[in-house]
Image: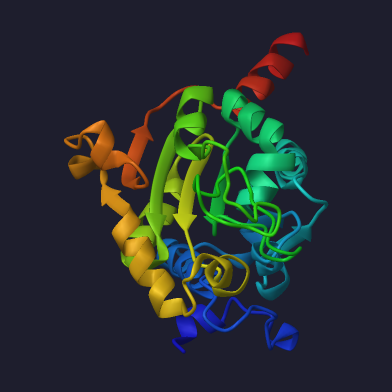
Length: 269
């Protein structure tokens, strides 16, 4: 493995716990390549996670890290950023961690537009705790708590972030890891709340129950259900059914929360 990646590892924490074929390792590589390309010092980075398979990332990287409670990565990250605005603060969350128990925190982090980069690993299932369906499980797909198929409408997390007040929002997949890396780098550089959703695979909890029995089959499925935004915009509603757009959805410059907070403090001193 390229030393540009391994220099950021806590090697004593390996081997990792992820299942064979899991996409989280691909996303970890994308995050580290993006950070390396920026030349940031490890001590200048704080990475926070909640609970779940994806949240184990913070245990393997040699930054200032915090593994918090389920759904609470963003409140902890907010405290860190407010205490030390110079830190580059990153949260890594799964779809259940971010969109279910952490959903309200996600909305208000976007509303505040606080300078945190939120990376959401969307494997469309609760992978670690038994395969329950999540807010991002596609309608009709199966989970341990949806044995007859999920009847819920799928949450569009990117649209939620954009409407709630974020500065940057994008979606990619582990199938197009170079695109994902570019989006992460852009999000890291963006002042304000930046969101990168990455559709990943879970060959154990999601794949087996949905007749996608190998990681290769899951990658092919992810490729087939995702459509570049330029193509998506031209599709009919029927053609959009069961598919997800990828690309950049929002990139704007609006006031950032820690700067506004400091301006307020300066006025009252």
